[in-house]
Length: 121
Image (cartoon, rainbow, N blue to C red; front, top):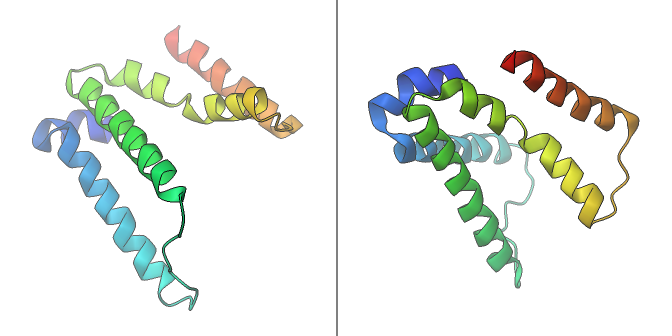
């Protein structure tokens, strides 16, 4: 995916447009999958909207910045660094939320970092 985005999509449409296309496609796919399930698609109520908006803005900004980096020709560097998001999320939840990390998660974190080392050789 990183190769396709970095060498074909971002140079053609730009970093922001490519992110919005993915966001809109995801929304349409979720609606198409969710409506036939018969489950409620109600929007959340209460003060959660500020948190949802903050997460959405930061997540979208991160994708735009990653695509901008790929558009500058640094596809290999950006793809390696952006693959860290899963490990960083698990580690931050362990540090700040005292989440328990299973052995398989530690193995996954180790494999991510090992992969980064092997790619950089």
